[in-house]
Length: 297
Image 1 (cartoon, helix red, strand yellow):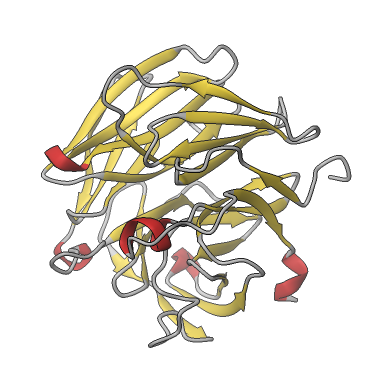
Image 2: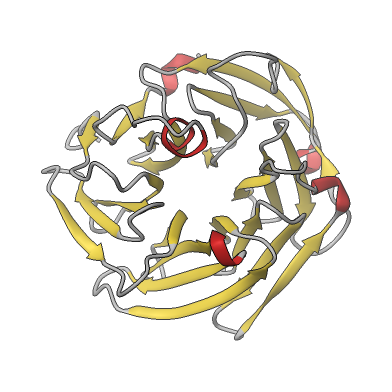
């Protein structure tokens, strides 16, 4: 971990890098462009940023991303908001070759992706109460679960971040408006809202915690990213049915999601709320920075 920096500044001034992922083997971060439709790669040791994927023609909106280190794949969510459709792009993480483009959502958008240890991907739809499942090896893709309890309020975001539990048995979906968490067994079963105590998970009128965005596990704890803060959830019941929340304000707002590098939590400052939702100039530069886990001690 000593060879990694605390902060990486991104070059683009208009990409709105909504998603971030990390490849442990090559020690590279990947940042996805919501507005540019491009993916850049950042060397975690030197900080050098280079193009990884540049779109041809009209760019799609790129959001959540994850690296499958074992199978050497980079998964990236794409959407075409003007056409209300979305799906996933799959790349060879080493060569940059595009391996697959899979449309999943009609009448919605694909926001974030999580990977199980067997390579199966789970993808959230922010406008429909759906989590999709994609198995490249089996050649199958479609709805994993649809539940009205995960329906988005009119004109707002519903499902957002997604994570697979460390025991590989559950899928957890983050929900933005208002903030909440849902859990469903990977083997099939009912969707349940996770009961949360401790710090408020959806505090009213707190500008730091405007709505849950990306979510990710570090060891057995779940971290929930908001524009100006991060919440740690420690699960207290079997099946991830309940948890205790610790909320912390971060040093720079404008966050959308996070990744894990060297066992540490790295967030991406993408300015999505500022530039896309509030239609104000982004507070540049965009960056990736470390949020010390000691904040939650």
